[in-house]
Length: 107
Length: 300
Ligand SMILES: Cc1ncc(C[n+]2csc(CCOP(=O)(O)OP(=O)(O)O)c2C)c(N)n1
Ligand code: SF4
Ligand code: SF4
Ligand code: SF4
Image (cartoon, rainbow over all chains, first blue to last red; front, side, top):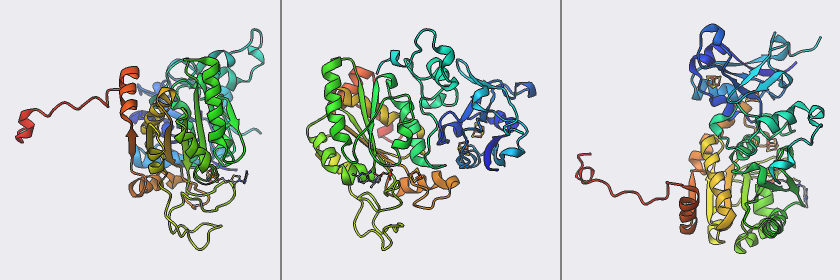
């Protein structure tokens, strides 16, 4: 198993800074959804990770901890994530994306 | 080399992979995208084998977002790590022999001008410090002396990363590398100065820990190269493998190197300033207004 980044929606949505997206070395990996967190009363959405593209470098963790000072991202073993976003389940919209979360590990 | 080349032929849409469909429908082609919109549109860069956490990867990602007309851009590269990612984007990529990238780009940009006239077709070279300052130096300098109108970007990781850690002309003096165990004996080459002397109309240094600045300098460099003359960007893009930088400390390292030998520097020729202002509406080169009398007397 290997580590991937996992973003806590409630902590991220409270800040909504979109910084990590600009520092992840991998393209199309940290995405942003206006919908995430709406069910919990947050207005502006949250970042999330397409875990099939994440290389586990933890640069986003550094950015969220030190630049955003928000501590919303943790590295986690992929088989410990009950649900995550995968590229095949991500839909792009006009200004934001939406993702259907599924189990990232088969079997 | 135009918006049409990425679009689906009638009836083929359903056979295209999801990533391709997303790129056509929600990518940057034919519209303006910015660094601040990252994470909400499909980027043209796809998966590639560059190392986890590599700052060069981040820089290439940002560069492709910054290209003013990605659908009218061709990238040129050479041996080295960067081409592993640059070649995996929906932007045509030309790959020559090691070090000949500025020769190839000279021919290409001239050919495009003959074929397309005034319609801008941007040529952007991205190559490592070894490819640019050592093996390709002769072709790089001559393309500048000849005032070839394209952009040269040096991906400066201060080492030959792709071949396991030899020193380059851009390695810092004293640096110890796997294949330079006694430490480098000579100073880092001053390519910025060489670029100015050789006649580049726009020169800038940049580090990837400032994504908006990366975006801004690349846009200006590409626009200046359309009409005014050669442009050169030198980007610090650390190699976390050869310099043993923990991947979660890559941005800390970039900040330290920025403070040490990569302070932001931008040179814009007078002609380029006028062109950016008049043609593209840049305000930053307008003469600063004289300070009001009150502030001169200290009562701002
Ligand atoms: C003519 C030739 N000589 C040598 C090589 C082997 N080679 C491949 S990449 C490379 C070094 C690349 O270093 P640099 O240009 O600094 O790029 P980096 O990999 O550090 O990004 C060398 C020597 C080659 N491909 N072609
Ligand atoms: S840096 Fe942190 S707070 Fe900001 S968008 Fe990313 S996860 Fe959310
Ligand atoms: S761990 Fe690295 S690759 Fe994964 S999302 Fe964070 S910055 Fe991107
Ligand atoms: S060897 Fe160095 S420069 Fe090359 S991809 Fe890996 S970290 Fe990046």
